[in-house]
Image (cartoon, rainbow, N blue to C red):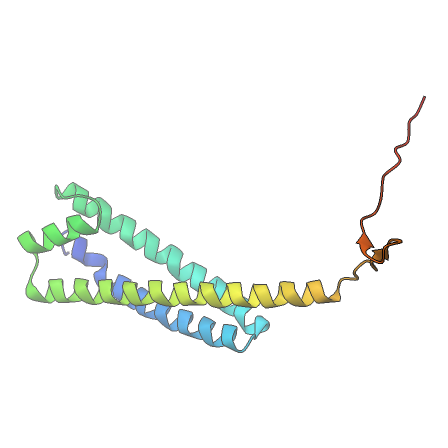
Length: 153
């Protein structure tokens, strides 16, 4: 049996981040096409991948801490410098690169979502009835005028 090592989960992490990038690319295509039905299918897969990645990262962090390193990415860098091979470092770098790619795709998808939301809100605003302007004796529009309150005695 292989001893506990921060490297144990990297192959799984790499597969998950690659799958997440694929899902984010699909999400982007659905956003551009405004395909809401397909988006609703992609979101649970994306969430499941992110959750699973979080579990593996937490496991890696626990193993780093047990080995005397910081339980974060900088700790992984230090562990690799002390204990890892060139292949280990290359695999870690590939994961970091795919993670940066996923973050950028997620940022762009967020911008697309905000644009779609703005378009939808604009369309809804155009459908709302507007009050007809009230013109005063001078021909200018006036406000609703003084309000009379109701006093209960």
